[in-house]
Image 1: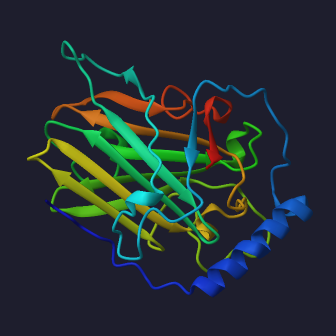
Image 2 (image 1 turned 60 degrees about the vertical axis):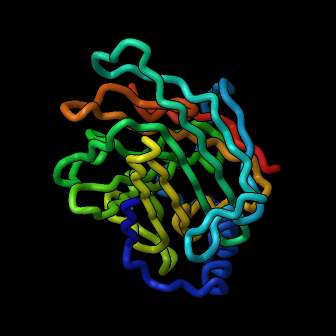
Length: 257
């Protein structure tokens, strides 16, 4: 197994929770903090799944099997010439606790082909996911991330998009288009099993300003990019709205279990 972990800073759970509560109050009670006024669009409900209200990863990144609830129902979005019989079984589990967002993704992969220099993670084997916490289908309100393991064994995770806000932001928070170094991103490449596993553990403040309460329904989309060693040939998608045009109205529905 090849494992690489970000050298993340330690975070006080108490301060994270406090910031989380403040964030909820800000966007729910003071919409003026948002630069773009909220609206809504007709939502699609083509895929649904569940998340746990209990942690699915320990503080050291070890899975907690009794809390994991797997979601599958992935579809293949072709982006190139697919080999006959192409299939990449993939599943994910998510958790929203009082102060963390956690994600485990497992995907079959004959050989891991990372993007060469870490600038465009989506070109190689990688993970992308996005949340629409208000659930109104507006792209401006989404928070999105990408993660990949690049040559040399280094893990990279970026925040691709975050809502534009006016006012103070939490200390434990990453602006859009910046590397995320406030949580844990572990990517295990398992050639003997022909499998890649992603384990993500983030403080809820990374979803600022739309910080969900554990138990809230969440609009969510996730995809795994597949590279054949030469080019990106497919995306394995749960929900839509990431590949083929950004559209938060196409996200799937996650409910607490």
